Length: 463
Ligand code: IFM
Image (cartoon, rainbow, N blue to C red; front, side):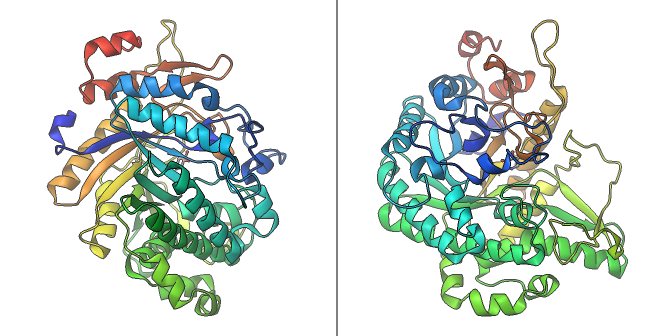
């Protein structure tokens, strides 16, 4: 399969996120984010690392843009670090921070790559967390203010905007299981964070639209294909619960303007939502978007369980549900490879909003990559994973789903959150000692897929 098998104009890009690649966490007026704090909690990060240096992208952005251009990508989805723009999450923008993203967007445009900016990929200013973080409604208002200031300074260069990345992770890994920053374990109260994140999306959408009438604005959800392990009522109820918490709790308010009653009931939060998630909030949250971004990696097969394992869980109120392994191949993350699920998640969104353009804003895989004696990284499994998911994208389009683009996760190995540097998702290998970027076999594969000409590949040592 080659890109010519996909419709003309189908966007193919690479994605990254600020804290995972930038480093330079103390430079040019950047404030601390919740990840700077969390990474220093003993035991929070598998290899004890931080994002202090990461891929040093802050100083190497030009080189990284050149690499993407040589690989032949149409678009680059990056995120803006809120604490680079507002060190404590409030007030006038830090012009050094703005300049970094202006230079990045300009160099992308010079190379013919369309910049796609995500406003929030998890690096909340620590000062806002100290005031309650996403559990507080005020954080949504601060987010809208930040969005307005960023669009004011970058709106002439960036047209494609994503408000949030994966609010499920921010809410439930951040405030329920505690696996992500800020590392809190509050059970069902974490769903208040979900509402405030979504409200932040709605308010930011309004702010972006009023400052940049030409902008295309969407948001990104991580959706899962969820199925019961058997046909029993109990297993089907388990699937309803996990589909509810992972998918419907976010899709429904954004695309139909209401929260799913069964999920609020499972959470035991019906009265809180009745009081705090006002009609006006839901009007803002469900205001029309230009596209929905979907991050798709894997499926969940679930079964009913007993209450024995009620440790802090990312599925509050449904801790008893068991995630079943089926024997299907998995990536290094233990995530089952299920390309057909790509169609399932696109269909979920399409059923709620038939006209809405959809983009896969992340898809990719971690494997144990090694530099071999020839200095190469032969990541055949990643090539297979990507190929299977491109084929699934082609099939989804054939079925009539309005899929308009695909962003690969990720351009280069980076700080994989609680896994630190122990999980590599990149198509470009990063030697963290020297910061050398070494394109893997998958990078060669993708550039051939994109039809990049042989001279450009040779210049990068890719052919
Ligand atoms: O690395 C993350 C990314 O930041 C968000 N989506 C999933 C990726 C792989 O875990």
